[in-house]
Length: 233
Image (cartoon, rainbow, N blue to C red; front, top):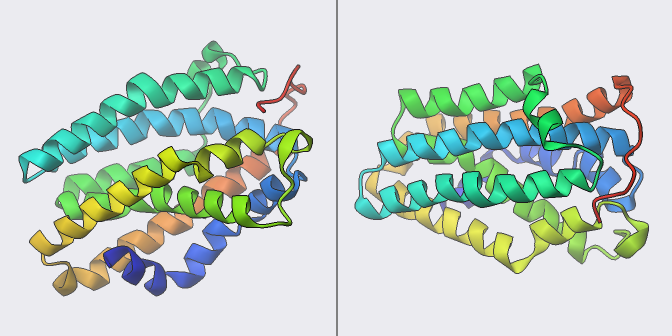
């Protein structure tokens, strides 16, 4: 499958992304809570851009089925995922007004601009490859943490709900749907002849994902935000 080829070609950067210290801190509950809180704030801004990217994906679609899928994905982010994110953030003492007013971090802008610009310059497959590291990577991380006996689970881990969400059946089904769809698209768009460019796109997206984790750590270290009243578990 194309996703397997891309992950293998970008193995070092993929490893850095999926095994980042931020992720390790989620697994053993050593991640500073303010780092996670800052990540959540930036992730809201990311979701806004992610919805726009899927809207662009609908515009770039070359089949009615892909048009429907991308439009549904954009609507789902706007109407469902963003609302769930707002509710989850409330559990960490972050209000919706705070999310809306937050200044976007440069690492966030760099990543989302890369995805949008890739979609504008290329075709539907280019955009799908730029988007898929986020979807697949979070699914891989969630599944690995949930299966690892060393992961701290339950009420003792404030990040339990995050692990459960990305390891859950619903999210994992979404990962399979996205990769299956990309595979069909690869056949139509002659992916084999374009592998160097697709690998470059996938690799850069993985690098930007790792930078997003690091952004959370850095912002958490330098932020003066007070601890939340309750955790998001």
